[in-house]
Image (cartoon, rainbow, N blue to C red; front, top):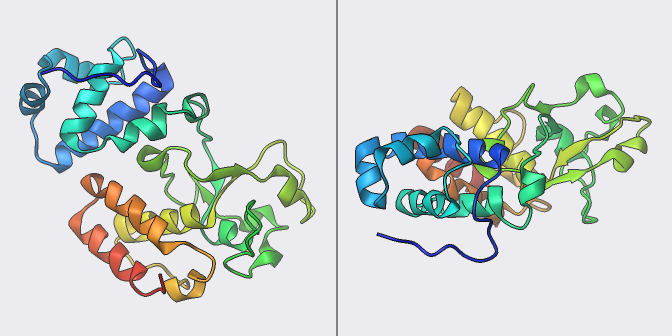
Length: 232
């Protein structure tokens, strides 16, 4: 079985991107109760190649990564990690503002803030940070909808060398993954109806659908129940 490699992708992945893809491939395979041997047979690759891919070996041809992505039903991962923003994805920030803090900051596209907790923006100790206070979802959607808010946060009297912030949609996605999937709890103090005038819940729902192979059925059900509480 062979697969064509699109010309707008590299022949090989870089190390950082390959590591991220491999880890998520392994999660997707386990979530689908698919053995390594079964995946090898379905892709036409050797078992050894599958192991290398899941370990993030960047010596493996990109076409092999694509073959695995197609069998697992996660082709979109290659766009997230290795598409036109490949160089940026390879350097995904370790931390970024998210959750209610990001929802309180006016996004870069000119929309108003989804929440009105702006008084907390001038106090870094109150910030909600993905990778520290909230689950970092880079393993699921890469650097999608992260923006450089270094200048924006300076308006609140905070000067930092570089500050990445989640868009309103990414901030909601992070909240849902952190509470519904990881902690098994409902999102406290924020309902879909509180933010649906600013946040595109359909975009959030699309990400959830794409990430379904990596999430528990209980988590998915809880997340979708929360989203359905808003006005699409």
